[in-house]
Amino acid sequence: MQILRTVQELRSWTKSTRAIFGDSAKLGLVPTMGALHAGHLSLVRAAMDECSAVVVSIFVNPTQFGPSEDFDRYPRTFAADCALLEAESAQFEIAVFAPSVDELYPKGAKTFVEVDELSSRLDGHSRPGHFRGVATIVAKLLIVAAADRAYFGQKDAAQVAVIRRLTADLLIPTKIIICPIVREANGLALSSRNAYLTPEQREQALVLSRALRTIKSKFAAGEHSTTALKKAALEVFAEEPVVRLDFVEFVEWETLKPVESITEGNLCALAAYVGSTRLIDNLIF
Ligand code: PAF
Image 1 (cartoon, rainbow, N blue to C red):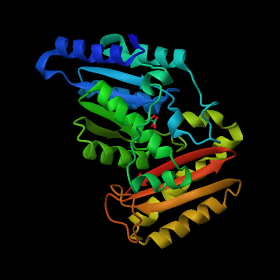
Image 2 (cartoon, protein in one colour; image 1 turned 180 degrees about the horizontal axis):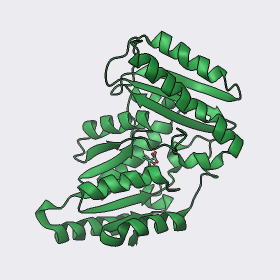
Image 3 (cartoon, rainbow, N blue to C red; image 1 turned 120 degrees about the horizontal axis):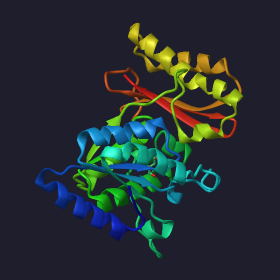
Image 4 (cartoon, rainbow, N blue to C red; image 1 turned 45 degrees about the horizontal axis):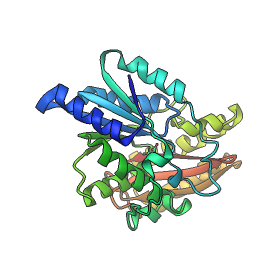
């Protein structure tokens, strides 16, 4: 498995891989910040199913973290990440793109990608500047990798909306593929940030998926009013008062604009703090 450290190395890998696989080559990109778990591996496997070769980027992107957020302590487990990918890559061409910050943000960098309106909704409202950082790094990765398909998880549903908008607006031809949320058996959505949780907090964190299950069953029983669904979610959160709800919102997935009555394809997104760890989860109706 090749480890690519520079933009030039990634561009050469893309070129030579396309030469090997010929006209029918399909290259897949799986952007990650490392600390890989089964959720990431589901993206890698989806990419392996559909592509001739896959590059997994591992880059903790400084511009998507606010000044008081967890950039410094974000889990960095590069050796373990490579071992996981190595195990996947026995019969398959996987490369890892793990550049330095200077490589992706050249000295004097002044260009950022701002997706108007969407960037200030949901997580973008709670984390000002977050989606500017995400949009900027994802645009760079899509341009440099020049892959046919890029794979993202539904868990970051607002991020998905931002990325779909930016690829459409910047005329980037890479097809964006969204893969389902991967959960532990108890319902907890997998996240690299779960590593911050104590065993007790892991139990408390189950309130997020419990609230979503309540919303889902009320919706299935015919309740489409977002006021009523939100009330039901708040009641579930009240059972776990140590968990601080940041938001529970019902929106159109494409625009992230609030809706009053749910229709198919709408998104319910929530975010909450368990101790100082901010967790997110969602469901698509
Ligand atoms: O979802 C993530 O892990 C990150 O936001 C991404 C897409 C890799 C950009 O840094």
